[in-house]
Length: 56
Image (cartoon, rainbow, N blue to C red; front, side):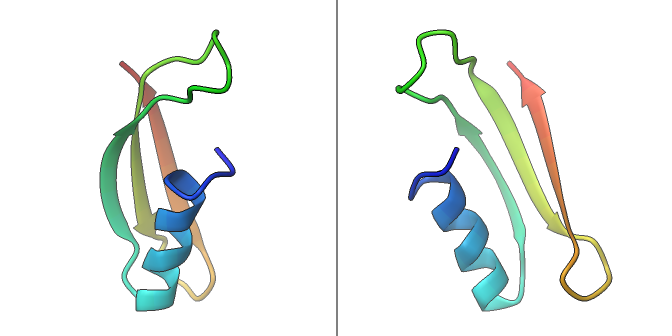
């Protein structure tokens, strides 16, 4: 998940001060990778974040 699509969105949300994203993701690097839904949110305190991952 260390790629521009996933990590880039996380870093952009932090830089904007509003990490509130919901998207689907599937890695093309690993043939065993699963299709997932990702939800990223601010945790309500400085420098803390929630990342929820659900298999689809």
